[in-house]
Length: 519
Image (spheres, rainbow, N blue to C red):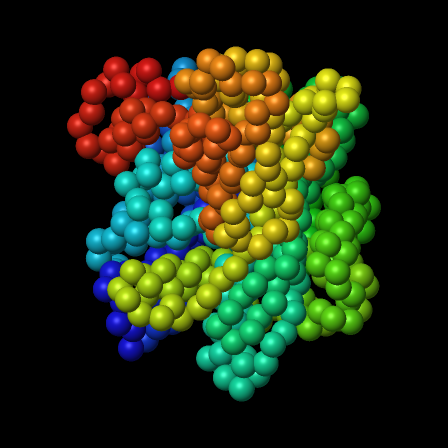
């Protein structure tokens, strides 16, 4: 029996599908069905004026009201607005994600009672900006996001918990696992050390713009080229026809997992075509995508300073990992039998729910049932100047794959006598040039003493938490200035906008002008 004071809930907020799970009265992670009776909710929205439809019905609308359908908003987190105008209005991506989270919550409340505290998962390779946007999406949905956890880490937790239930003695043995997570819109690889109830990430890598959606795109292009050759017209020129073609290609991809050939139907301007596609041809036209995942997998293993002989198990996560080409590639690359004991669709939500239970344990004064230690997927630093060349350079403060939480510091110097302020530009990435890194934000230290000499040391401190969130401190030698700064982010919603969108999405009466002013 579980003794949690509140429901422990985890949400896998996916690019193409989302899932929600909780820890039941027996302490087991269980996926909760949505209002339609399904375990997976398509991360697709139909935005009709004030009526928002989410899930399967929104997917159907791709063929009739494509201009009003939003999908893959997760790929655009960190942008100011979603790239597609919906009903003559633009929405921030985190608002669209907030609507999906809100539906998951409302559907779950009918089964487990009211709750607000959740753990939400993100791709391991998400940068700080996208993590903050995900947390904002939870706030907009009326949720209290206890933590943001990496999807491969959550999957590893689900595996470990399931193993402990199935074979307690084996679960006590230390093991090193590699999680290959190919979802609908993102790809991650993480190497983890499991030791009883301890889960430690050793290295992680990935691509936030690579997933099953890109395999679908190749089929869409293939069918379009066939239609162009036959009829001399592009079916993608009509939005609804394009929407139907995308659905056909998504279905064809799924069929090719089970069968060696299938057909893609396309009707446009009174012309109809059925295009045959074989699994062999599909695998040839997407080989470069698969090779990208293989390269990242090898690279992650190198970053962990391990060889394949030191990997005890390879876990497959994400719906796209079911493709036969993925399985064959990994078997050849690793020389191992792949572990398919956990559900690729449910494992991430299950692990997130277990992590939520551990956090609630801590809040209630109990020892947590699991202990998780993550690493950062990107280096964090400050944009500075090379004293020898005057060129902009990235000064790394926290290297990638550093175990979290961590506090690190680096000393910089003022550039001139009597300098009154210091601007700290925070960047994330591996490039030596700040221009090629992700701009996280900035903070400004003002009120420096008027007589401060040039080259006065300025200490910049980074505190990076396990959920991938960053706080910055700045100290100035010879002064009383020792500040902890909130970061100003160019593309983030401010608190007023967040509050307005939260009221709007959750259905509470609001000041309309506040929402209209939101970007």
